[in-house]
Length: 396
Image (cartoon, rainbow, N blue to C red; front, side, top):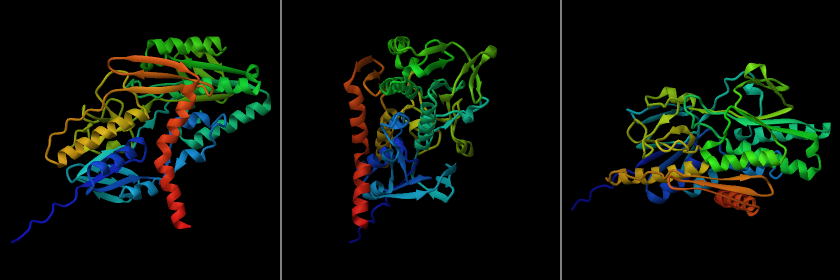
Protein backbone atom coordinates (compact mmCIF):
# COMPACT_ATOMS: atom_id res chain seq x y z
CA UNK A 1 0.00 0.00 0.00
CA UNK A 2 1.43 3.38 -0.99
CA UNK A 3 0.80 6.71 0.67
CA UNK A 4 0.74 9.96 -1.24
CA UNK A 5 3.32 12.56 -0.25
CA UNK A 6 2.12 15.67 1.53
CA UNK A 7 1.84 18.71 -0.73
CA UNK A 8 4.76 21.12 -0.38
CA UNK A 9 4.34 23.88 2.16
CA UNK A 10 3.20 27.12 0.50
CA UNK A 11 5.87 29.80 0.19
CA UNK A 12 4.50 33.06 1.55
CA UNK A 13 6.51 36.24 1.15
CA UNK A 14 6.02 39.57 2.95
CA UNK A 15 7.86 42.67 1.78
CA UNK A 16 8.03 45.29 4.53
CA UNK A 17 8.32 45.38 8.32
CA UNK A 18 5.91 48.11 9.28
CA UNK A 19 2.47 47.73 10.83
CA UNK A 20 0.97 45.93 7.85
CA UNK A 21 3.94 43.63 7.34
CA UNK A 22 4.22 42.46 10.95
CA UNK A 23 0.46 42.01 11.30
CA UNK A 24 0.43 39.95 8.11
CA UNK A 25 3.23 37.75 9.51
CA UNK A 26 1.37 37.15 12.78
CA UNK A 27 -1.94 36.41 11.11
CA UNK A 28 -0.56 34.20 8.34
CA UNK A 29 1.33 32.07 10.84
CA UNK A 30 -1.85 31.61 12.89
CA UNK A 31 -3.93 30.64 9.86
CA UNK A 32 -1.29 28.58 8.04
CA UNK A 33 0.92 26.73 10.55
CA UNK A 34 2.76 24.71 7.85
CA UNK A 35 3.57 27.59 5.54
CA UNK A 36 7.11 28.73 4.81
CA UNK A 37 6.94 32.44 5.55
CA UNK A 38 9.70 34.91 4.70
CA UNK A 39 9.74 38.60 5.55
CA UNK A 40 11.98 40.90 3.52
CA UNK A 41 12.99 44.30 4.91
CA UNK A 42 16.07 46.55 4.69
CA UNK A 43 16.53 46.73 8.47
CA UNK A 44 15.94 44.48 11.45
CA UNK A 45 13.83 47.19 13.05
CA UNK A 46 10.28 48.32 13.67
CA UNK A 47 9.57 51.93 14.62
CA UNK A 48 6.35 52.76 16.43
CA UNK A 49 5.46 55.83 14.40
CA UNK A 50 2.34 57.07 16.27
CA UNK A 51 4.47 58.07 19.28
CA UNK A 52 7.01 60.11 17.29
CA UNK A 53 4.99 63.21 18.20
CA UNK A 54 6.20 62.87 21.81
CA UNK A 55 9.92 62.91 21.02
CA UNK A 56 10.34 66.68 20.45
CA UNK A 57 8.88 67.48 23.88
CA UNK A 58 10.75 64.68 25.68
CA UNK A 59 7.87 62.36 26.55
CA UNK A 60 9.68 59.75 24.47
CA UNK A 61 13.43 59.64 23.93
CA UNK A 62 13.54 57.48 20.82
CA UNK A 63 15.11 54.10 21.69
CA UNK A 64 11.90 52.85 23.33
CA UNK A 65 10.15 53.25 19.96
CA UNK A 66 12.72 51.18 18.03
CA UNK A 67 12.60 47.40 18.29
CA UNK A 68 14.31 44.52 16.54
CA UNK A 69 11.90 42.33 14.62
CA UNK A 70 13.98 39.14 14.33
CA UNK A 71 13.32 37.86 17.89
CA UNK A 72 9.57 37.98 17.29
CA UNK A 73 9.89 36.57 13.77
CA UNK A 74 11.91 33.69 15.18
CA UNK A 75 9.07 32.94 17.61
CA UNK A 76 6.66 32.93 14.69
CA UNK A 77 8.97 30.70 12.62
CA UNK A 78 9.24 33.41 10.01
CA UNK A 79 12.52 33.70 8.10
CA UNK A 80 14.00 37.18 7.90
CA UNK A 81 15.85 38.35 4.79
CA UNK A 82 17.67 41.66 5.12
CA UNK A 83 17.14 43.23 1.73
CA UNK A 84 15.17 45.90 -0.10
CA UNK A 85 12.63 45.13 -2.80
CA UNK A 86 13.71 46.39 -6.23
CA UNK A 87 11.19 44.88 -8.64
CA UNK A 88 8.83 42.04 -9.41
CA UNK A 89 8.47 39.29 -12.01
CA UNK A 90 4.86 38.33 -11.43
CA UNK A 91 4.85 35.79 -14.30
CA UNK A 92 7.63 33.78 -12.64
CA UNK A 93 6.45 34.69 -9.12
CA UNK A 94 9.78 36.25 -8.14
CA UNK A 95 10.36 39.31 -5.98
CA UNK A 96 13.52 41.12 -7.05
CA UNK A 97 15.59 42.28 -4.08
CA UNK A 98 19.05 43.61 -3.32
CA UNK A 99 19.86 40.10 -2.03
CA UNK A 100 18.64 38.34 -5.18
CA UNK A 101 15.35 36.92 -6.43
CA UNK A 102 12.95 35.41 -3.88
CA UNK A 103 10.24 32.97 -5.11
CA UNK A 104 6.74 32.96 -3.67
CA UNK A 105 3.34 31.35 -3.98
CA UNK A 106 1.67 34.43 -2.47
CA UNK A 107 3.19 37.86 -1.90
CA UNK A 108 2.11 40.63 0.47
CA UNK A 109 3.60 44.03 -0.36
CA UNK A 110 3.75 46.23 2.75
CA UNK A 111 6.73 48.45 1.97
CA UNK A 112 4.90 51.72 2.61
CA UNK A 113 4.88 54.84 0.53
CA UNK A 114 7.36 57.64 -0.14
CA UNK A 115 7.18 61.38 0.45
CA UNK A 116 6.56 64.03 -2.20
CA UNK A 117 9.30 66.62 -1.78
CA UNK A 118 9.05 68.51 -5.04
CA UNK A 119 8.51 72.01 -3.61
CA UNK A 120 11.57 74.27 -3.42
CA UNK A 121 13.29 73.77 -0.07
CA UNK A 122 11.01 70.87 0.95
CA UNK A 123 13.95 68.54 1.59
CA UNK A 124 15.25 70.90 4.25
CA UNK A 125 12.15 71.15 6.45
CA UNK A 126 11.46 68.84 9.37
CA UNK A 127 9.07 65.93 9.01
CA UNK A 128 8.33 64.15 12.28
CA UNK A 129 6.64 61.20 10.55
CA UNK A 130 9.85 60.21 8.78
CA UNK A 131 11.13 58.33 11.82
CA UNK A 132 12.89 58.56 15.17
CA UNK A 133 15.95 60.33 13.77
CA UNK A 134 13.82 63.04 12.17
CA UNK A 135 11.88 63.56 15.41
CA UNK A 136 15.14 63.86 17.35
CA UNK A 137 16.27 66.59 14.96
CA UNK A 138 13.09 68.49 15.75
CA UNK A 139 13.81 68.13 19.47
CA UNK A 140 17.35 69.45 18.99
CA UNK A 141 16.13 72.50 17.08
CA UNK A 142 13.39 73.14 19.64
CA UNK A 143 15.96 73.11 22.43
CA UNK A 144 18.05 75.64 20.50
CA UNK A 145 15.06 77.97 20.28
CA UNK A 146 14.40 77.57 24.01
CA UNK A 147 17.99 78.51 24.81
CA UNK A 148 17.69 81.46 22.46
CA UNK A 149 14.65 82.82 24.26
CA UNK A 150 11.87 81.87 21.87
CA UNK A 151 10.99 81.69 18.22
CA UNK A 152 8.44 81.14 15.49
CA UNK A 153 7.18 77.66 14.67
CA UNK A 154 5.07 76.95 11.58
CA UNK A 155 3.28 73.65 10.96
CA UNK A 156 1.33 72.13 8.10
CA UNK A 157 0.74 69.12 5.88
CA UNK A 158 -0.03 68.59 2.21
CA UNK A 159 -1.39 65.92 -0.09
CA UNK A 160 -0.60 64.37 -3.45
CA UNK A 161 -2.48 66.47 -6.03
CA UNK A 162 -2.89 63.37 -8.20
CA UNK A 163 -4.32 61.36 -5.29
CA UNK A 164 -5.88 63.62 -2.64
CA UNK A 165 -6.20 60.85 -0.06
CA UNK A 166 -2.43 60.31 0.04
CA UNK A 167 -1.67 62.41 3.10
CA UNK A 168 -0.96 62.20 6.81
CA UNK A 169 -2.29 65.23 8.65
CA UNK A 170 -3.19 63.98 12.13
CA UNK A 171 0.38 64.13 13.52
CA UNK A 172 0.59 67.82 12.60
CA UNK A 173 -2.44 68.65 14.73
CA UNK A 174 -0.94 66.58 17.54
CA UNK A 175 2.41 68.36 17.28
CA UNK A 176 0.65 71.73 17.22
CA UNK A 177 -1.44 71.19 20.35
CA UNK A 178 1.29 69.20 22.07
CA UNK A 179 3.79 72.04 21.58
CA UNK A 180 1.26 74.54 22.87
CA UNK A 181 0.72 72.48 26.04
CA UNK A 182 4.43 71.83 26.57
CA UNK A 183 5.45 75.47 26.08
CA UNK A 184 2.80 76.55 28.60
CA UNK A 185 4.18 74.03 31.10
CA UNK A 186 7.65 75.48 30.54
CA UNK A 187 6.28 78.96 31.18
CA UNK A 188 7.49 80.26 27.81
CA UNK A 189 4.41 80.07 25.60
CA UNK A 190 4.42 83.87 25.25
CA UNK A 191 7.94 83.65 23.78
CA UNK A 192 6.80 81.49 20.86
CA UNK A 193 4.53 82.17 17.92
CA UNK A 194 2.75 79.05 16.66
CA UNK A 195 1.30 79.22 13.15
CA UNK A 196 -0.77 76.60 11.38
CA UNK A 197 -0.96 77.12 7.61
CA UNK A 198 -2.76 75.18 4.90
CA UNK A 199 -3.89 75.58 1.32
CA UNK A 200 -7.45 74.62 2.28
CA UNK A 201 -9.82 76.69 4.40
CA UNK A 202 -11.05 73.44 6.02
CA UNK A 203 -7.92 71.29 6.55
CA UNK A 204 -8.32 67.74 7.80
CA UNK A 205 -11.65 67.02 6.13
CA UNK A 206 -11.12 63.26 6.39
CA UNK A 207 -11.73 63.60 10.13
CA UNK A 208 -15.17 65.03 9.44
CA UNK A 209 -16.55 68.56 9.34
CA UNK A 210 -17.32 68.71 13.07
CA UNK A 211 -13.77 67.66 13.97
CA UNK A 212 -12.24 70.29 11.68
CA UNK A 213 -14.37 73.05 13.16
CA UNK A 214 -13.44 71.92 16.66
CA UNK A 215 -9.71 71.92 15.84
CA UNK A 216 -9.83 75.38 14.27
CA UNK A 217 -11.84 76.77 17.19
CA UNK A 218 -9.28 75.36 19.60
CA UNK A 219 -6.46 77.04 17.68
CA UNK A 220 -8.25 80.37 18.02
CA UNK A 221 -8.81 79.91 21.76
CA UNK A 222 -5.18 79.02 22.39
CA UNK A 223 -3.71 81.89 20.44
CA UNK A 224 -2.45 79.80 17.55
CA UNK A 225 -2.25 81.84 14.37
CA UNK A 226 -3.87 80.34 11.27
CA UNK A 227 -3.12 81.11 7.63
CA UNK A 228 -5.65 79.21 5.53
CA UNK A 229 -6.60 79.12 1.87
CA UNK A 230 -3.11 80.14 0.72
CA UNK A 231 -1.29 77.89 -1.73
CA UNK A 232 2.16 76.76 -0.61
CA UNK A 233 5.05 77.73 -2.92
CA UNK A 234 8.15 76.55 -1.04
CA UNK A 235 10.49 77.01 1.91
CA UNK A 236 13.75 78.66 2.87
CA UNK A 237 15.74 78.87 6.12
CA UNK A 238 13.59 81.62 7.63
CA UNK A 239 10.27 81.56 5.77
CA UNK A 240 7.38 79.56 4.44
CA UNK A 241 6.73 80.90 0.96
CA UNK A 242 3.17 81.25 -0.27
CA UNK A 243 1.77 82.31 -3.62
CA UNK A 244 1.51 86.04 -4.40
CA UNK A 245 4.89 86.59 -2.70
CA UNK A 246 3.41 86.16 0.78
CA UNK A 247 5.58 84.62 3.49
CA UNK A 248 5.29 83.23 7.00
CA UNK A 249 8.37 83.86 9.14
CA UNK A 250 9.53 80.60 10.69
CA UNK A 251 12.52 79.51 12.76
CA UNK A 252 11.29 75.91 12.80
CA UNK A 253 9.01 74.52 10.11
CA UNK A 254 7.28 71.18 10.71
CA UNK A 255 5.78 69.94 7.48
CA UNK A 256 4.46 66.55 6.39
CA UNK A 257 4.32 66.42 2.58
CA UNK A 258 1.92 64.37 0.54
CA UNK A 259 2.69 60.74 -0.21
CA UNK A 260 3.51 58.89 -3.40
CA UNK A 261 4.27 55.33 -4.45
CA UNK A 262 7.76 53.95 -4.01
CA UNK A 263 10.21 54.08 -6.91
CA UNK A 264 10.58 50.30 -7.18
CA UNK A 265 6.90 49.95 -8.09
CA UNK A 266 7.87 51.11 -11.59
CA UNK A 267 9.98 47.94 -11.95
CA UNK A 268 6.89 45.75 -11.86
CA UNK A 269 4.07 45.06 -14.28
CA UNK A 270 1.52 45.94 -11.59
CA UNK A 271 -1.15 48.53 -12.26
CA UNK A 272 -0.42 51.85 -10.54
CA UNK A 273 -2.81 54.53 -9.36
CA UNK A 274 -2.60 58.17 -10.41
CA UNK A 275 -0.42 58.89 -7.39
CA UNK A 276 1.97 56.03 -8.15
CA UNK A 277 0.65 53.55 -5.58
CA UNK A 278 -0.16 49.89 -6.25
CA UNK A 279 -3.76 49.76 -7.42
CA UNK A 280 -5.80 47.34 -5.33
CA UNK A 281 -9.32 45.96 -5.49
CA UNK A 282 -11.71 45.63 -2.56
CA UNK A 283 -9.89 42.46 -1.38
CA UNK A 284 -6.48 44.22 -1.45
CA UNK A 285 -5.41 42.24 -4.54
CA UNK A 286 -3.16 43.90 -7.10
CA UNK A 287 -3.38 43.36 -10.84
CA UNK A 288 -1.11 40.27 -10.61
CA UNK A 289 -2.28 36.86 -9.37
CA UNK A 290 -1.41 36.08 -5.74
CA UNK A 291 0.08 39.53 -5.11
CA UNK A 292 -1.60 41.60 -2.41
CA UNK A 293 -0.90 45.03 -0.97
CA UNK A 294 -1.56 46.49 2.49
CA UNK A 295 -0.90 49.85 4.13
CA UNK A 296 0.54 52.98 2.55
CA UNK A 297 1.89 51.13 -0.49
CA UNK A 298 -1.58 50.70 -1.98
CA UNK A 299 -4.46 52.68 -3.41
CA UNK A 300 -7.80 51.17 -2.41
CA UNK A 301 -11.46 51.57 -3.31
CA UNK A 302 -13.60 53.07 -0.59
CA UNK A 303 -14.83 56.37 0.82
CA UNK A 304 -12.83 59.53 0.11
CA UNK A 305 -11.82 59.72 3.80
CA UNK A 306 -10.17 56.27 3.77
CA UNK A 307 -7.06 56.88 5.88
CA UNK A 308 -3.43 56.02 5.37
CA UNK A 309 -2.73 55.08 8.98
CA UNK A 310 -1.46 52.14 11.02
CA UNK A 311 -4.95 51.03 12.06
CA UNK A 312 -6.10 50.72 8.45
CA UNK A 313 -2.92 48.82 7.53
CA UNK A 314 -3.66 46.32 10.31
CA UNK A 315 -7.23 45.83 9.10
CA UNK A 316 -6.00 45.27 5.53
CA UNK A 317 -3.34 42.79 6.70
CA UNK A 318 -5.94 40.76 8.61
CA UNK A 319 -8.17 40.58 5.53
CA UNK A 320 -5.30 39.68 3.20
CA UNK A 321 -4.11 36.85 5.45
CA UNK A 322 -7.60 35.35 5.45
CA UNK A 323 -7.86 35.71 1.66
CA UNK A 324 -4.50 34.00 1.12
CA UNK A 325 -5.53 31.16 3.45
CA UNK A 326 -8.82 30.73 1.58
CA UNK A 327 -7.08 30.56 -1.82
CA UNK A 328 -4.56 27.99 -0.59
CA UNK A 329 -7.45 25.89 0.75
CA UNK A 330 -9.27 26.00 -2.58
CA UNK A 331 -11.88 28.57 -1.57
CA UNK A 332 -12.72 31.86 -3.21
CA UNK A 333 -11.36 34.87 -1.29
CA UNK A 334 -14.04 37.17 0.08
CA UNK A 335 -12.65 39.20 2.97
CA UNK A 336 -12.76 42.98 2.60
CA UNK A 337 -11.15 45.20 5.25
CA UNK A 338 -13.77 47.47 6.75
CA UNK A 339 -13.05 51.14 6.03
CA UNK A 340 -12.42 52.80 9.37
CA UNK A 341 -10.64 55.89 10.64
CA UNK A 342 -9.68 55.78 14.32
CA UNK A 343 -7.27 58.27 15.83
CA UNK A 344 -6.61 60.13 19.06
CA UNK A 345 -5.49 63.70 18.42
CA UNK A 346 -3.20 64.00 21.42
CA UNK A 347 -2.12 67.19 23.18
CA UNK A 348 -0.06 65.67 26.06
CA UNK A 349 -2.59 66.60 28.76
CA UNK A 350 -5.69 65.31 26.94
CA UNK A 351 -6.91 63.97 23.64
CA UNK A 352 -9.74 63.93 21.12
CA UNK A 353 -10.92 60.59 19.79
CA UNK A 354 -12.15 60.68 16.19
CA UNK A 355 -13.83 57.55 14.85
CA UNK A 356 -15.31 57.37 11.39
CA UNK A 357 -16.98 54.51 9.52
CA UNK A 358 -19.44 54.31 6.65
CA UNK A 359 -22.30 54.76 9.11
CA UNK A 360 -20.89 57.01 11.82
CA UNK A 361 -18.61 59.95 12.52
CA UNK A 362 -17.99 60.14 16.26
CA UNK A 363 -15.85 62.52 18.31
CA UNK A 364 -15.01 62.55 22.03
CA UNK A 365 -12.68 64.82 24.03
CA UNK A 366 -11.22 63.67 27.36
CA UNK A 367 -8.06 64.09 29.39
CA UNK A 368 -8.00 60.29 29.79
CA UNK A 369 -7.50 59.78 26.06
CA UNK A 370 -3.85 60.79 26.34
CA UNK A 371 -3.36 57.89 28.74
CA UNK A 372 -5.36 55.61 26.43
CA UNK A 373 -2.93 56.41 23.62
CA UNK A 374 0.01 55.50 25.85
CA UNK A 375 -1.65 52.25 26.94
CA UNK A 376 -2.22 51.29 23.30
CA UNK A 377 1.46 51.90 22.56
CA UNK A 378 2.37 49.48 25.37
CA UNK A 379 -0.16 46.92 24.11
CA UNK A 380 1.05 47.07 20.52
CA UNK A 381 4.73 46.75 21.40
CA UNK A 382 4.40 44.07 24.09
CA UNK A 383 5.15 41.10 21.79
CA UNK A 384 8.20 42.79 20.27
CA UNK A 385 9.53 43.79 23.69
CA UNK A 386 8.93 40.34 25.20
CA UNK A 387 10.68 38.61 22.29
CA UNK A 388 13.64 40.99 22.54
CA UNK A 389 13.94 40.41 26.29
CA UNK A 390 13.86 36.63 25.85
CA UNK A 391 16.52 36.81 23.16
CA UNK A 392 18.79 38.84 25.45
CA UNK A 393 18.26 36.39 28.32
CA UNK A 394 18.97 33.40 26.09
CA UNK A 395 22.23 34.91 24.86
CA UNK A 396 23.46 35.86 28.34
